[in-house]
Image (cartoon, rainbow, N blue to C red; front, side):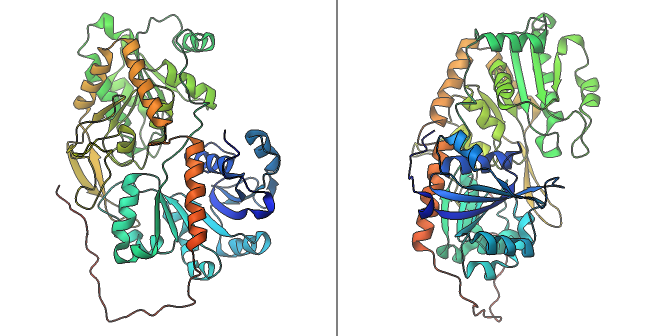
Length: 478
């Protein structure tokens, strides 16, 4: 961990209030927040308004500086936590601003959780800027998010698609904003390749499979919710097994680290009974909470990580797999495209534009060797009152089965060599899916903001007679 990058003494650091999940917990959002704090604590002082559904520590204040010092090797970090149910209220935020006197506010997670804050943005931005590390799963560009994006001074997009969406939605308002690409970064010293002869890995593998002889392992690690398409993933595995003789199929296994039953998804036991109930099908549900070391073991015994989500902002389990040196099978949608490194006609890493907003059409077929993309075969517009429209990119389980078979037909050594190429790219400067590089990008972006930011005017004139159509401003066919 490079804690010396852009080091400032505590009294010269800007203080930032980070509103997101409690950075002590292990949600995806909290993990990202924690990585940012840890890798920028030498440059910024942090105050985390740490949210939870019904926070048991609400009303308390914790000093996390000692723990952060231990993690970073520094001696002078300043990290404070205010636990809160939800993400706070206007009055609570006003109290924190009065007590902590921050230089900026930073947000991470879906904008609908911050409508209360965006409602008072005029009050906040007259004194300090608002920074938003944001993500959006899919097109059409969400024009209903425009007021939220307008309320921010720096928009850091987790995916290339998100940066494009931010610009498209803001239209002529984009000229007054700062946009940066800051993809997710994780601890690559925790998610890392382990040799098959690693004694702990050998022991872990035996605990999972017992005395079963298993030659090929597919792994799924995500929530059991509808958009994750877990039943389709099980169906793809069944299609794959049906192409093998029973003797060979019995040496394959599928591990799913997820909830078996969820009201937001389905009853996976029932799906298993329908599709994969024979002894040689080898379905393993992993439901216990695992620490990072345990998850890394699962990625390392796996021959591929699969994620067929129909719309996905990023897909952290793919990042974890790549860092562990494991190939990925993924639906081509959202931020998962970034992790497959598609190559455009100029030989560059594909960047979405209004003309070609996404590669979910399969326009570009060249990609990183560690990636086994599954292209959607149909697209429908879904929605809800809060998010009236969003594309749902569905891939065919039969296409996914073909990708599984491609990997199965390779040797273990070949699969691992492809996975290691993915890790080499992920930890490099171009991708930068590590905590250190993410922290560096956050520091550079926020420092640039502080150099150029001017306080919001107390009021602005709006021509009420001017009517602008709320129409799509990017190609729908491409």
